[in-house]
Amino acid sequence: KNMMLALFCLSLLVSSGLAIIPVNTSLNTVPIAYFGGNSAHRDEANINMLSKMRIVMIEKWEGHCWKDCLADPSSSACHSGCAVENDILDTMRRIKAVNPGTATVLYWNTLLAFPFYSAVGQFAAANALTIDSITKKPITLRNDNGMNGVFVYGFDTDQGVQLYIDTVKNLTSTGLVDGFFGDKWHSGAAANTSKGADPDQWLLCNHVCGSVTKEQGQRWNAGKTKALTAAMAHVGDGPYFSEGEFYGLGSNLAGHWQTDPSLMKGDPRELAKDVAKYLTNHSYMYMSCTRDQQPTTDPNAPSTLVTQCSNDTLARFLLYVEEGVILGTNGWDPVYDYPLGNPLSAAVYTPARDGAPATLHRNFTSGTSVVFTYDTSGK
Image 1 (tube, rainbow, N blue to C red):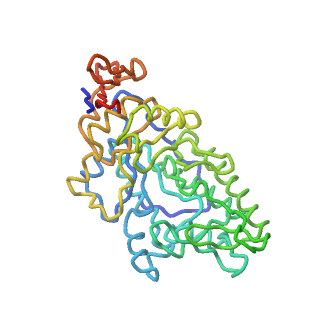
Image 2: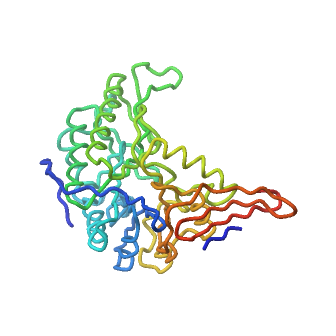
Image 3: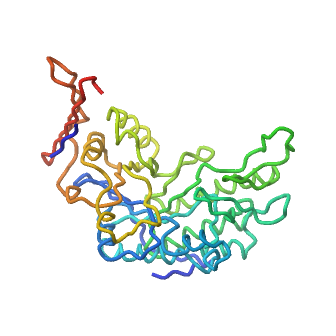
């Protein structure tokens, strides 16, 4: 048991841009975040909920492009003219109008070039999509939700590298985007290890594979490293999410964008290892009690506006929160606005004794206290 007291048209001309907002890591109140996207329009109640977050990460499925393209690959939604950036930026504009201090993160994959981004149309126009060395056509892969026909950024070309960097610069220049969700960060070209495969054949894969030569694959990996390094340097302290590393290159925000198991069950002391692991190499850690909100979710339903985290989950989080650790809640609870303050110490473990169960407890400068009581087995 736990107890606790704008429409946007991407241009190749890179402007100087407005200030990028770093994440507010203060523990004055509970630091919370949102990650997801909705195909339906968000009403003002939803925007007001999002404006209370420290970080809002908006997925590629904001608006109609994703939904319509997935339903009909031949539709106009599967082309760059659909410009999903417009829908994402409009949501961010509305959030910033309520709270300019919310750090906003736009989904910008590091492998899969979804065809409904206006920016991907510029890659195609510049012949900066990766070409399959066998078919001589742009490689198309399948994303994790089953969408086929997804291109690959041409990191094996100078144009592709520069376009990726320029896209980051252009999006942040709007003053609406503070960082990026670099999905497939760890994905790159690798040798074909199938029995009897040509040693000169390398592959780029996501559920299906495209072929590149060894030299092309090595060039692609080097180009991706160059592009991500430059993109992160531009964003600076703005949140840039990565899953794992790419040839030793990681970003400043990492963690569990899906449910963190230690937040839900087991010994909370496992969270201490998690926090130490991520904050050693990252400025920010994302720890979530729920997965990314799906596009079919009704953003205006009352149940969507409230936190997806239980009080038990919040108590576990508070036992090991440090500055830089953010809780993904995908909804609001008034308790998140209660005074918290810095912890007075690390969580203190008291072993079971004289019939009393073992406990973990932690106190904060506001007077808030958190107690976790183990069951009779000590778990």
